[in-house]
Length: 65
Image (cartoon, rainbow, N blue to C red; front, side, top):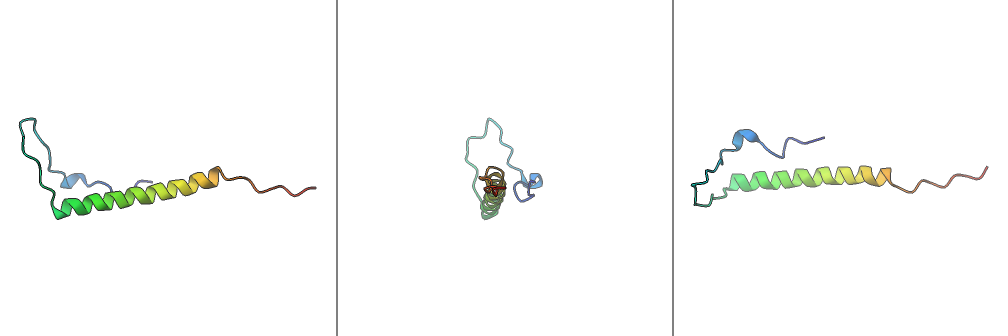
């Protein structure tokens, strides 16, 4: 399940041409979007690891019959 906090294509106006030699400046808004994307990625990773731990956990011992 992908969260919508990762990337907003409407805000992407940073198309660069090969002729552009100057670096782009990072604004506070850009830094905030990067931070939110990182937090969303961490959240997805933790959820995935919880599922993997459950999937590959050692099964409980069966009672002797």
